[in-house]
Length: 195
Length: 377
Image (cartoon, rainbow over all chains, first blue to last red; front, side, top):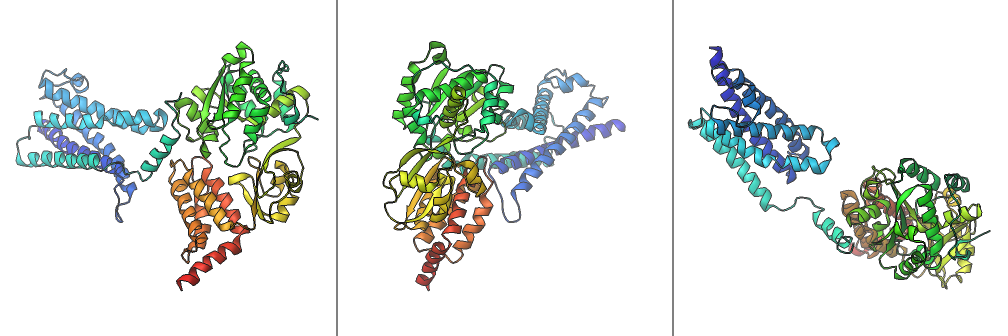
């Protein structure tokens, strides 16, 4: 009975992680687009993005720990931390480990952003665009509930939401109201060629 | 008594100078002549204690202030004096490198500096490089100079880190105006405190141009030496575009010295004294300068870029008689809101200038606003 509780927790936490992570990605994209309205100030987007990201890690930890300690799977800690080291579903679990480690790096660098500088932080934050699809593939590939109607709906909803957000980001240009003027000024005082 | 523009510019051996020069500078009370009037000794000590033989000296001859001509004149006529100051700084601060940062349109000044440099010894020449400052207002700012030398783009950056902490190539850096360095050279040679100031007289004068005046010389005397007014003056702009409009009688009595100006809550800035004739509209003149300063915002900070543009637009509307009823109040409110909201001091300088215009030309601003109201009524 305890074993099946662990197993259900792993599956449930996995599904919740997917929903939370997709929300975080969408919110992150919306914040770069400076989306706002009367009822939705911009700090709400960034605040939610931050807090949901921390919550994602909590559910991800639950997902991983319950999977490892479940005696039925017999995975071991190495399989949870070293990609493609698991004998069980090597590829799919490996993808999950990679997604987890990328997300951990992204969250940790965000917590110490003041120390590492904006440029480094941003470069690492871009890895989200790798971590999210890898995580989704892990869920589709090894998820026990992948083919159930509700899980199909969740996965499809998450992919659609992130897809739409990325599409809008790519087509909307810069949301910075100073971007045009700043570029013009920088071009006027740029002497890189002359040196 | 030695004056900058009377000093011989012949190439002579550098006077011996060590850490004692910083004390001599401190005793002389020398302050930076680029416009900020910051104590030179304080700046040098900050760089010296971090240098470890790696520091960089930037000789600032950008002179981005449109009315100012004194830095150009000094570099053109006394290049060795400026270079002496730079090499003394390099020696005292144990600097590894000197960068001459000269306005790209100041050809005569740059050529004079390069000719003088070519006459120096090989070990001296080896540590000097030359960078051209874009002819924009903010390019003369310390952090903009460092940004150009490092990355080729002359926009101001946020401080801290201050130049004395992390400047050119990441090394502790001294950015010093050319006039200041020339004074350092004289202090090292004569041991005397500098007693003159370079000023640029501009506007409605018969012979506008650069003067080297004894500290304490009145504006009236400087006007007399500039041939007098061409027509009755309306007001005097003291300290250039980041300066203050002053009523003519009061301005004529002012002494051309930063300490004396400070006691009147004024600043000499880069040393520009501009005379506005009665034939020109003060509101129109203020609007024009605000337009210029708005265009010179590097568009990095919203309050500066949008704020100065809104202020310039409003001034222009009042000058053209198309203002809205609330425009005058808006100018006052926005001026207060923009202040201190930029990464550099560009918005602050512009707002100090505008506030003095709103004070001194209150009746003109009120009249021109009222004219617009009568027209629409």
